[in-house]
Amino acid sequence: MDRYLDHLVVERGVAANTAASYRRDLRRYRDYLIGRGIGDLAEVDESDVREFLVDLRSPGTGEPPPAPLSESSIARTLVATRGLHKFAVAEGIAGADPARAVRPPKPAQRLPKALSVADVDAILACTGGDDPRGLRDRALLELLYSCGARISEVTSLDIDDLDLAHRTVLLRGKGGKQRLVPVGGPAVDAVDAYLVRARPSLASARSGAAVFLNARGGRLSRQSAWQILSDAAQRAGITAAVSPHTLRHSFATHLLDGGADVRVVQELLGHASVTTTQVYTLVTVSTMREVYATAHPRAR
Image (cartoon, rainbow, N blue to C red; front, top):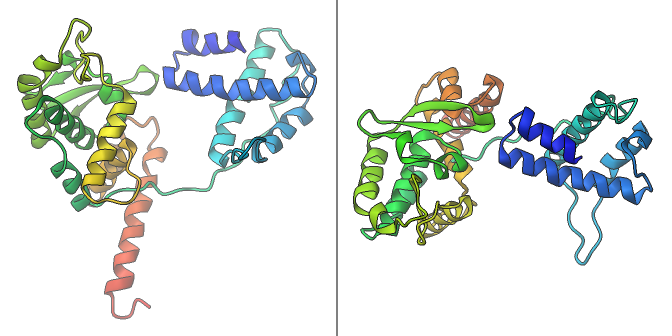
């Protein structure tokens, strides 16, 4: 398993977060195999892999027992498991691939949860102040919504990634892929105010080139950025759960509502396939049906 994880990181170049997810999934698989008295991948057969899927759907032990994994988490875990067995065969560790015929469950399609434009405006209005942390928080959230960026893409930004004069930012997405995306006027103003009036007072010897800094001068973590957004949403009176990915969903949905081409939105989001982006078109169709049902005199 360690050799496979090293292969993913060194030879396949998977992102750190992806590697961490695979490690958690494979540890779960390892513990399952050991519990069945299996100590070698060459001893695993197809029934063991299928029983593993059944085990993932079962509640765990403990007080209270942990909930069974969701279908999407089970599918991801099986992908890691299948990759491990395929690697074992390629490396001569095992003679057959017992997971080859085992297919992951097809998760039910879930529509992304997007905020309304008014809710996004309310969150941004409740973010920030004239102190360094307030200016940082406003710049962070404005940039997240303006670019539709993943939270890790924004917290990993360096100064040279910003080109405020041309209103662009260089984002580094999954698999090390880069994309240059435009930045809206309010976000440019917020980031400029933060860089000029706030970042110098937060910076320390450990800051390096990081754009967004914490109170100790280090790079702002994803968890801290998440909390900044949660606090702003609470102040705005939004009761639904709001995460950085909610702003990303909202960015895509609002663009499509405004008439943007789905392939342009794909490029802005950094999706490898337009199929991933097309789920957002379902959101806009859902909204259209809701409006029709409530507005048309003979809709019902």
